[in-house]
Image (cartoon, rainbow, N blue to C red):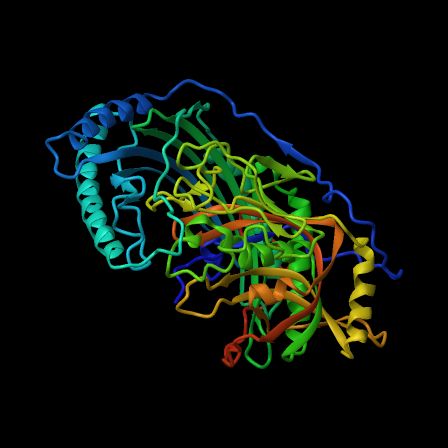
Amino acid sequence: MYRLPTSVVPALALGLVLSLGAFACERGDRPGTRSPMGPPLSLETTTLEPERGEPAPALAILDRELAVNFAKLNSEAVDDPAYFMAYDLVGVESLWLEANDGALDKRHIDDDRTIDVDVRVGDPMLDNGHPTNGYYGGNGLGTGIQVSLSDDPLSLAQALWMVTELQYRDAVESWIQAMSDESMLTRADEPAHPDFTTVDEPLVHVEAAKSVDLEALAEQWSPVVARLSAILDADPVVQQASAMLNAVVENRSYVDTEGAKVQSGRVRVRLLMMVTAQAADGMALERFVSFERHDASQLPSPAELEALAEQLRGELMRLREAPIAEPYTGPAVLEGPAAGVFFHEIFGHRLEGHRQKDDHEGQTFTKMLGQQILPPFIDVYDDPTLASVDGTPLNGHYFVDDEAIPAARASLVREGVLEGFLLSRSVVAPFTASNGHGRRERGHRVVARQGNLIVSARETVPEGELRDRLIAEAKAQGKPYGVWFSDIQGGYTITDRSGPQAFKVLPLMVYRVWTDGRPDELVRGVDVVGTPLAAFETIVAAGDEPGIFNGMCGAESGWVPVSAVSPSLLLSKLEIEKAMHERDKPPLLSPPPRERGGQSSGEGTVAR
């Protein structure tokens, strides 16, 4: 099995979803033409300057305790001295609103704070961060232990004392295991990859603390969430109609023994709508959408959300009547956001630095630097410094990564040629420094992760002409239809050598585009499958408009916010298979009558 090197969407109730920035494309009728090879597709991007502030008291407490504890663990009195330590204090305030079937059933505000203590024993070339048997846990890096909400010096010092002791012992044990493992291996044909890199100029970065009035936000959005749920529920065949709003305010204080001091924060607001039903043959169906924003003011208006709720319910009703797709191999178009998910899953994860030096990983692209891996008209880079594209906020934006390295643009592919990898401070040769992509969810160890993955095209087809190109490609291959993917919920990819180097992408809205002029036909029960090298060879054209998805990605270092931007892509060959098909009988009991009614307060009422 793979070790979660993927974005997966099994837990909609937790909101662990990819947010799709579009639902349909504009399809023209004119024959397609290509523009000449030129510069990458132009994007309207914005960057932000961090709001500077004063250091919080916690930063000084962490710095003082770090100096005291490291002086002991780095001394000659210790048999196996630590050579690096870091304290990472993360405070989180969160609001969770959830409505089901037209009524609010959760309104929860929480406040907690955790400490991650990282201890490194050995030396940068081989330390306790080295994977043992393909496993990164239990090595003295990352703990996520809860600590007091107040900056009480004694309380924090007590917690740091105890956790540092435990982490040091784990670090020594992991380092000894790493040395033992390495002594049994032969690496004559491989470059030396350090487990850690030091910095010459430690970063001092102090932002103003982030704050949001969560009580006021709850008052504002509770009736909206209930109303959206009621609209989703306004059909007798609907089985679940959920609307959720989650707001998270995170403030981080970080210090390390090199002298770095970082105080940073972020606000993330997610609104999600989900509606489910069941086809007559038992297949479970769903439609959902989520919006990831930096502030609640950036969310669509209630009126826009209500219209979208109506659209989702209507699409669900159409899916119930749609035929089940048959297995197929042939031309397909991935609409912009769907193409972004596609690249995030099958490409972005395989360029994360730690996967290039782990013997348990497939290392698909490890030895392909300087080689052509994509069509020459495709560029790919990851840039967490971008705050928005074409006015849409990007979820993968940050100023400083979780190892006190400034966020930076990482060029991955230029004109189809592989140029680099995503790097944390655990770099991969021939690179010698992090490019600001070391990330983690609190309680996990840092590894290299995606932030804002951007796919850009130097040669484009007008977006409205991709449909004609798809039909022409299908005719050339003797296929009765091509396939159009307008909405994808996510997927997963296997990067571990113990399994096939394959991917599966989970579409939601899929159409057959017939070559004989028949109207496009919605189908259901589709999964996209394949292997990355084979899939990339079939990209033949790109649209001229970027599509954006925002979401959360889960891997070894936990769940982190990510974005992907891509134009629509035409592939000459893509394989689809039948998705798992439940055959549960529809409910025996009749649904409650949809009579006019609602909550006595009037909030969230809808004609039923």
